Structures are given as C-alpha cells and as structure tokens.
Amino acid sequence: MSALSALFIRDLKLAIRVGGGAGIGVLFFLIVVTLVPFAVGPDMALLSRIGPAILWLGALLASLLALDRMIAADHEDGSLDLILTGQSPLELVLLVKAGVHWLTTGLPLVIATPLLGLFLNLDAKASAAVALTLLVGTPALTFIGLIGAALAVTLRRGGLLLAVLVLPLTVPVLIFGVSASSAAIVGPVPFGTPLTILCALTLTSIVLGIFAGAAALRQGMD
Amino acid sequence: MRLSATDLACVRGGREVFSGLGFSLAGGEGLLVTGRNGAGKSSLLRMMAGFVRTAQGRLELAGGDPELTLPEHAHYLGHQDALKTSLSVTENLEFWTGYLGGGGLPVPAALEAVGLDAVAALPAAYLSAGQRRRLSIARLVAVERPVWLLDEPTSALDRSAQETLTELMRAHLTGGGLIVAAAHGPIGLDGARELRLGEAA
Image (cartoon, rainbow over all chains, first blue to last red; front, top):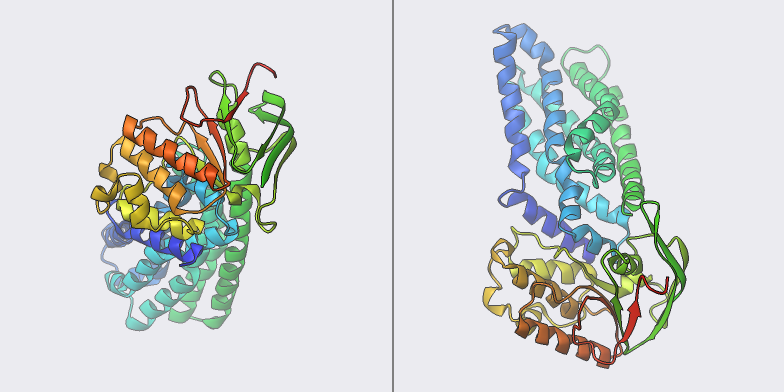
C-alpha cells in the first residue's frame, strides 16, 4: 500500500467514525435551508428566486465547519510531525487530505441538494442545475479553505480566524456559482458561461491551495 | 553511515538556545543528549527531524540513500504519541507502517514485541499513557529506518517496557543503526556517548 493511499484510508475512517464530523456539515446545511422558508415567509415565487443563493450560502458555511480540524487535529496529537518525516511531498499529502475533506463534506451536500431544493420550491431542472454548480464549485471552497487551515494550524482557537480569512476569498466562487444556477433557471446568460468560469476557479484553487497550504505549513512549523 | 553536525546553532523565539554544537556519530553508535530543562535537547532532536530550522551550521547524514533527506531516514519519537483515538491499536500502527514505508516487522509481530498484542483490536482511546508510548515504540520496529531520534523515550514506561525498549535499542545498534536520545537519566543505552547541552555553550 502506498503512503498516500494509507493516508487517504485513514482520513476517510477518521471522518466517518464517531467525532469525525462527516455528517455534521450536511446536517447544518439541512438546518440552514429549512430555516429560510420560515424566515422569508410563504412566498413561493420569492423562495424559488432566492433558492440557489440560499443553497450556495448554506453549502459555503457547511464546508467551513470541518475545515479547522483538517490539519489542526493532526498538529495537536503530533501526527503532523511524523507526516512530515514521510517520503511523500507535502503538496500531495495536502491534496489527499483536502480530497477526503471534500468527499466527506462537499459531496454529501451535492447529494442532499435535490432534496433540499424541494424546501425552496425549486423544480427538478433548477435543483439539478444547483447540484451541478455545487459539484463543480465545492472543491474550490475546500481548497481555498486549505490555505486558511494551514495558516491557522498553530493557533489555538484558530477556527474563527479561519472563517474570517477564508470567506472573503470564496466570494468569486459564490458569485459564479449562484449566477450559473440562476442562468439555468431564468436566463438570460447561457448556463455554460458562468459554469466554465466556475470550473476554472476550482482548478486554479486546487493548484494554488496545495502549494500555498504547503508553504504556509512549512513556514509555521518552527 | 555517519551522522555529523558541525557548528550547529538553534534560535527559538529570538533566543539563542545553543550554538557551536558539533558531534559525529557512526553506524552502531548511540548518543545520549543530556542537560537541564530548556537547554535545547528537544530542539536538537526536532532540528534533526527537520521540524526546526538550523539557524547556523550543518547536519549531514553520509552513507544513506542519496535520494532521501535526514528526516526521511529518521524515526522521531516525541512527547506526543501521534495516535488517533477512534482507530484501533492495529489500525494506528498499520497506518504508520503504510505511510512511513514499512520494511520492519509485520504489524502483529511489532505489537507483540512491545506487549500490546492482547489489546490489538481496542480503540486507542482506551490505552493508558504507558500503552500509548509502547504503541509509539512499536512504530520504530515496524518501520525500518536507520536513525532513531528519541525524546525521553522512557517516560510513562514501566520497568518491563523499559527493558523491552533497551533490548530494541541494542538490537538496532547491533544492526548498524544510529540512536540519538534525549533523557535526564540513564535509559539503558550502554556504550553511548554523552552530549551535555547548556554547559559548554
């Protein structure tokens, strides 16, 4: 078994076992989306208009939840030290860790979206469009968050700082995610245009995230 | 294989911890690092493991795999046991052997060597401090690496576990490995040279 697959399997096991927090994100997402109709009132037209934005905001906040534990947990129990003495490049280690984070927090949100779309009066086509934009966009949230997680790793109570650091950086992803969803529902821009930009943002953030995260970790280890 | 340090200096938080430190260690030799609290024993080990930058001087390992750095040749046994409480004892060790490269004893044999075979299926959350330490020591024998960096390895260990550790260290040295250990008292590394920090510097 190669080093990185060992890390992948361990992180996956940790996430789905007790205290791992894999289910928390999707539960939080559910609560946020359920509360909105109560806050907005029974205006079906308004709900379906703001639905994609609500789903995106919910996903953004939910993917932040487990972010601060992604690296900090390994730092606190000394595992990070030993991971650094491994022969795998730190960039690939972070790629694996962030990949597991997305599989356990991002992907469940995408799967839950069609169900939650019903709460917001979205029809099948609109729900599918939002789910597709989340599928494309949530990896960007994870990998941008990775930079913040690596920066905040040595700080006690870094979670709050992490949110303040990461949320402004996710603004472009939010804009193009919501505009792609709206384009699919009401137009007039074709769905493909903002979606392509969203894909580009995700690919860029994967590359930037792992290199910036690794640099931040090396700097912060001292 | 030879581990050598020349004119090594360490600065932590703007304060010079030690400077002008040098030693040379051949395969099969042990080095016992002693000194008062805060003299830089842990810093020296962490520096060799690559976690702390060298402010000055050089650390070199000659005769190892030229593709690998000194930290990649080394086992670091620190104050923290690097265990995940929701994984079982076996899963914890299997992860580290998979990640760090293996090549030593198979996992069940390594657990038996440190006397943890009876609790192999137990989640690591239920281990005592001494058992956690034993599990860390099992990592040393399950993954084959020539340089052992041990930071107070006997803390929390009972007498029989200390004897086990002594035997493992002796076997490692006989096999041509190197050990650098920081400790306050004797840890059974006979024939090891002693490096006192905080007096010469």
